[in-house]
Length: 165
Image (cartoon, rainbow, N blue to C red; front, top):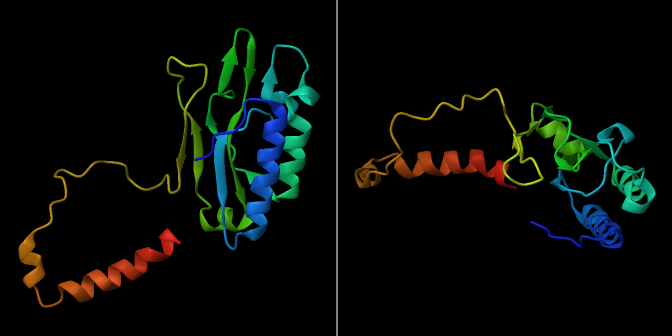
């Protein structure tokens, strides 16, 4: 989690820092947050045209320089509002490798709470059932006495460890 300056100069520095981290990172990566800027003019409705002051051009340059793709969204078109100004400030951006690794990933703009921001939700595999299991998982100590327990655990751990890297 990253908290950045609320001022446009601080955003530009954050984006430079993130690009530096991206250059040193091998493999897929994704960043999701309130960027306090829009990529496209249709992502802002109302208010005064302040794209240069707000750092939108620098944000677009950063996205292009880091070769990031916007994951798009499902839901309402804007994630922030103040009075008559509506903007899509919250988004997920990913490297091409990340997008290939999670081709079905979706980002949803959820209904706003009492704040001026709408929460966003990233689902890596939206096709997977979200139905809760009937009972919570409970570990049984007796499983440790099963002859194949450690082999099964080792095999399953190795299969799922790739997801954690």
